[in-house]
Length: 246
Image (cartoon, rainbow, N blue to C red; front, side, top):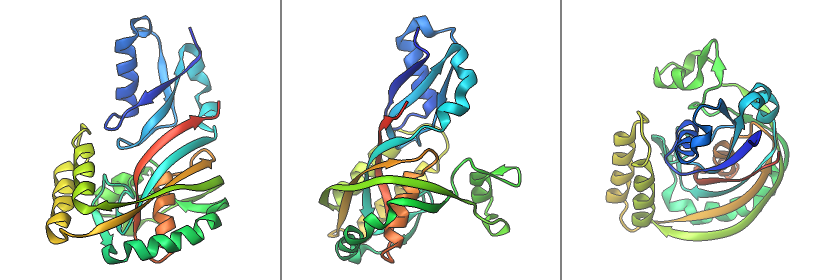
């Protein structure tokens, strides 16, 4: 039996759900202790590293591995989660194409080490409570949002596309409906649908990147920061983890 297994987490699943699906398909692991190292958000997909048996004791080591991602950045909208699974906080719809050109000029500035804020919807603990607790409770003004130094080893633009808002909203709402649990789905779907109703003829620019990053890097925060570097709004429309460097 392998000490580690890489499984493919699909959009909508939590890491625990992905691990349990693996157990269901591989009954020899039914009663074997397993743990995942390095979570993926519900809308992210790709490689998930699962530890087997006694290797679970070494989880801290595996949590610190470098990773590679392919991700798409939607220019013109920002949410409180920095991906589509959040409440829309700002839009810059009419500047999407212009600001995408700015991002194309500036994205290489993020290669190297930079200090990245933790997403307010993350499990990072502040004063004994996870960040998402402070956010859901409406008490973010009581704390200082922490940040950490992360390393972006490489960042390459591999594609760009224009996407009509009708196609965009259909894609986002379809993915959100795949997520179980309480993630404010109804409110979020309504917001995206309202955005379509109020802006029926709008198109957005989407930039697709490949990145190699250090452990603990938040790709959705990187997507937001790419937008803010150009005084605009942006979010991680899609995140795929393509490699965990074991």
